[in-house]
Amino acid sequence: MTTTQFAAEWLALREDADAAARAAELLEPLRAHLAGDELVIRDLGCGTGSMSRWLAGRLPGPQHWILTDRDPALLARAASSLPSPATAVIDERDLTLLAAADLAGTSLVTGSALLDLLTVEEVMGLAVACVGAGCPALLALSVVGRVSLDPVDPLDAAVEAAFNAHQRRTVDGRRLLGPDSADAATRAFEGLGAVVHRRPSPWRLGPRDPALTAQWLQGWVSAACEQDPDLARDAVPYLRHRLDECTSGRLRATIAHEDLLALPA
Image (cartoon, rainbow, N blue to C red):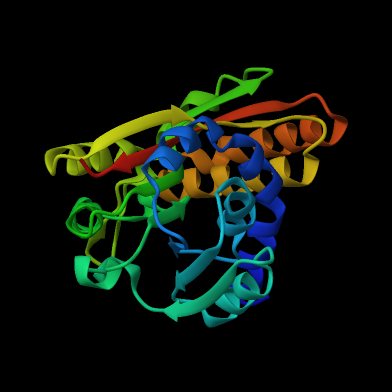
């Protein structure tokens, strides 16, 4: 399986949970800020387009979406699935290099599960670009580092701590923000004079979500063990037990995220 195929399958698996989790109450202050006959919306790290599918029908039209990602195959899927009558163009680029000039004429910048993959410098650059262009930003589903599992297991806390450290790891010289991203974005936007609204947007997984819960569990434990190899010995029976609970419908998981709306003053 290619990286693109895995990404597309994972994004499809999580789309319903993402849609249920997003903080729809942030749309009221956003709508009050939007103006113009046609909305131009740039979706950063768009993947297969789940944000546009969720948001297009919740904002007034007409709408023109600029779908931005580095993966051309994912971009093609996103463009082909945009709800009608919205229109779209694809923009294959490194989103961390966007400047205020690139956002000229943009009504809204969006991103989903994006901030935690950036560095503090990249988040500041995004804030500078958005505020410089006078463009609001709706940035959804940033991890905040809290997981609640029912029933509880003694190893939960150690896995969570190792996973959070993995989210903050350094990759190719870039120190990722991980669970610190919503706080970092708030400081960046507010430091430039924007008004920031934040709301929780947790995944709540249970017996109706066995495939997503199992895939998330495996990724969560695997990342924790990569970060802390000493966990591996206990993690094998832990994961087996948790997957058995998932299969039998006994496991419930709440994975905390946060949505952020930044409105230029």
